[in-house]
Length: 234
Ligand code: URA
Image (tube, rainbow, N blue to C red; front, side, top):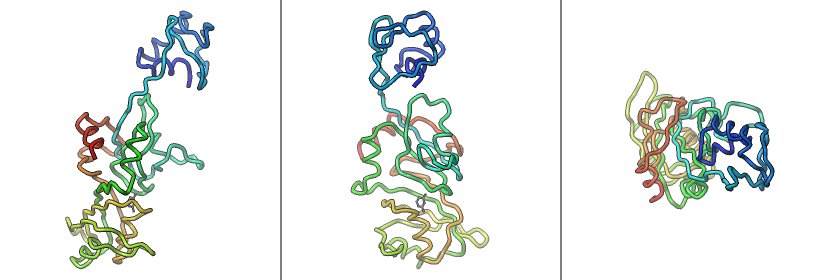
């Protein structure tokens, strides 16, 4: 990390002011004054401001992103495709996605630098229900809904109990709200396929009690204290 960004990430001043501090020779690296803006801080460098050791503010950051279709849920992509990280403009702290949404799925994605929280939210033993709105081809019947609820074979695996309800029929499509607590690869799409329907659009609208709400596509916001407490208590 560049020195000026490092200083700003210590939570003591802005990036611009950090440059001023460097220029004024108030910053030392390993005991030696460093007045070059582009210096890259190494893992074990001792950074001092006015002879006081300063460290990156390790406070936890929790955000919810409304992921648009066409963004990969990963920190970096070998093929240089757009990733969810590209949407986090203006965020100084590095966060990573909790779990995964497919490239062609949109909606609620938690991102944090809290590894413990991420581990907990993705561990199957906690059975956290994720709610999706699926637009599927054709007319879903009550019989299909019962099958989805009881569990279907998605290719050598029978899905656990789920909740599903038809919310609307639109032309030749059905909109179904479905809640699952497992996270098998492309699970919702495969569940609908198992009852003979192709998913055309898929959006995650909630994780447990945490709702996507009116957050615009491609936008993110920090979680409120209550929301963080809720996730921590799960
Ligand atoms: N189920 C899917 O099929 N895709 C997702 O992105 C999430 C759940």
